[in-house]
Image (cartoon, rainbow, N blue to C red; front, side):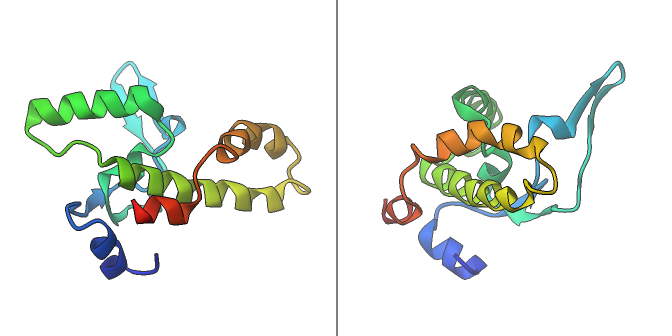
Length: 127
C-alpha cells in the first residue's frame, strides 16, 4: 500500500485522523501528575488502528468499550490486522541492527514468534 488513495480504496469505511504513530505502552509514562506521552516524530494522519497495533485483545476491547460509550467507531479488524502486519515488517527490519545492538535479538523474539503465526498480508487485503 503506497498511498492514501490505495488505503481509502481498500478500507472505504475507515476515516483517517491525527494519530500518535508510535504508541507502544513504553511511550506512555505514568506519573503522579497523570500520563505523559512521548516520542512524537511519527505523528501523522492515519487510522486509529495504527495506534492500537500490538496492544492485543485486551487493548482492543478497552478501546471498543470507550468508543461505544463516546459514540465513536469501533476498531475495524481488517485494518487492525493490516497495521499489525506493517508493524511486523518494521520489527523484522530491526533484525539488521542486531549485530550492532545484540540485546535487540532478545527483545525482538516474542514479536518474531508471533509473526510466524500471522496470515500473509495479501490475505488480509483480500478480506
